[in-house]
Image (cartoon, rainbow, N blue to C red; front, side, top):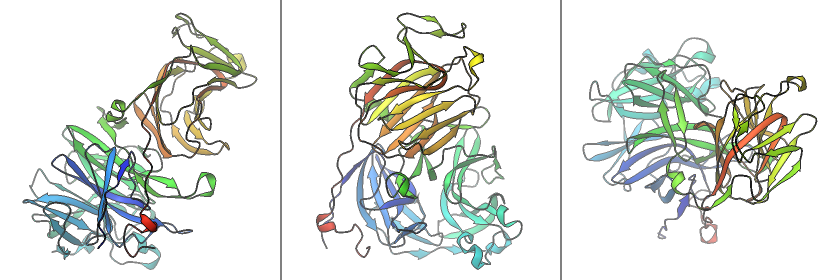
Amino acid sequence: MKKYTAIPRFYEYQPLGYHLNDFALIRKGIVWHLFHITGRGLKGGPGLCNESLALGHATTTDFIRWTEQPAIPEASGACYVVRHKGRYGLIFRQGSICWSRDLFHWSKPESLQFINNPARWYDRCNKPEEARYIGPRDPFIMLNPETNKYLMVFCDRTEKGDVYNRGCVGAAESEDLVHWTYLPPVFGPKHFYCESPHIVPWGGKYHLFFSLSPEAAVRHAVSEQFLGPYRELGEGNILPAYHGAGDAIQCDKRWLYFGRVMEREEHRNKGRLIQGRLSLPVEMDFGPDDRVSFAPYRVLTALRGKLLVDGFRRNWRIHHGDWRFNLENTPAQNLYTEAPAGAVLGSAYFDDAEFDSTTLVGNFDLECRFQLPTFSFTAGVHFRAGLLLRGCLRLEFDALLQTALLSDATGTVLCTAPLQDFQLDRYYDLRIIYLGNFIQVYLNNRLLMYLCVYGPDTGPTALIVWQGDAIFASLKIYQMPESPPVPVFPGGEPLFPGLP
């Protein structure tokens, strides 16, 4: 057998030559181990092919630098790993378990034993027209602090009711990870089908996160009891599209959330969205109303390099439109907020206004403050401004539509995000992290967007006002490390023998 060589990765993790799907994370010492479905996108097909041959495996200590490890041929499919009595149990495809003491070498699979009939709560008719949505999938396992037994939650469907509202998060419990007893659903029936459920304990309550088929975005439910029932908060996604199949872990007293960010198999508009890479972590926090927010991973701040752009005094030029630079603190147009020294004001009523930086940037971490001030209502009430990134991506904030939009160079909208209670005459803190082909957008430290984009490796930054006025202040752009080139196997040898 040819010796395997570990290959380092940087930022969003992806196995060499393959895509990543549902995953699980577990810690051993200072090293975190990632186990995941892996496969290749089938041209013209809806998902990954060859994803049933082995589980992918990678390791990290900081969730930024990854090392791909040999695949695990003993297992495949959605999985979860739990430590039990000095060993690690890897449960996969909801019906099998392998054991390991080091997370690298695994026993042959043995079947799980379920001692009661699931049909009391769950549909097992396997109707052909609903075959994809029958049977338990996507296990998540956690020790129940109330009974000291393991609780497994999984996605499933109930037997009766409206076909579009039979999705549920099912449950089973065990003392040894091998013998299981089915329990009633902890959530639902509601929705067509739930995906990738997982539970986070916080503030004396339990928070259930899951995706909706076809595995897009994230939903949130909460309960005072570990076994539920969980009640959904709101009726919308709490994370932007392209960010599904998630998991949350506790690391250094912080909760980190990971998702599988989808990407386009082909650049620009010719491709379709497919399962992609493991996202960088985002930090979770909960408010007094149980709502969750996601903030930037603080380790990224420590990676900042050279300060490429600091304010607007140097290396900026007016491309067109009306712009004014503030030498000192002055009242804003609305007269009751302030435009600080060093800020710029852009106005656009008959044509858009653009203010360009001549500094080219590649991977970057950008921070700035901005507001859309009221001034003259005779010119209309549509206020819209934003930035041009790497010379190709337009990030817009529309106060009238209460929406943030991200568009590519052709004007195609790639992503939208609702702006909750976005107000005129109020300053907002914006942070944009752009690494390789992935962009994260935060407003007031809350995640708005995280998705794969395509464009040039480097380009200029510009401020743009399309309608109304905008004030930009305290702009800083830091250089971020580039991802090293990913080598290929000699002769194009596939990672898993037998895969085309």
